Length: 109
Image 1 (cartoon, helix red, strand yellow):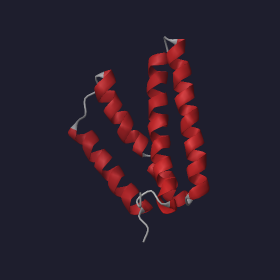
Image 2 (cartoon, one colour; image 1 turned 45 degrees about the vertical axis):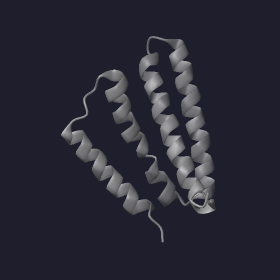
Image 3 (tube, one colour; image 1 turned 180 degrees about the horizontal axis):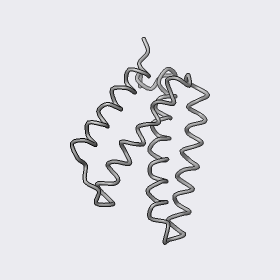
Image 4 (cartoon, one colour; image 1 turned 60 degrees about the vertical axis):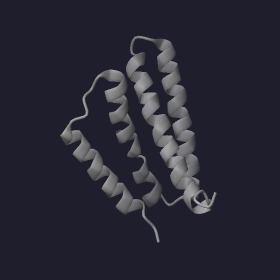
């Protein structure tokens, strides 16, 4: 795959890290009454940290770190799907602004 050459691997790993981080936090939300969910949350969060560290080794900090905000988008979707938290127009506008900012920050020629 040409897209996943060395130049983009660090970015992809940070997005994977964002997924695991948001998933871990969802399980922590559920885990306040269930220790198994809490443990799964720690496992996911730990995996997120591993992917983040690898991403930092491959990508510039100023490019990789802003991509972590993808976890906000994932958390917004998780809130809607699993916790009954409505996605409002205000929240969608905030996510769009985050997306624009991340794109501008992480775009390289």
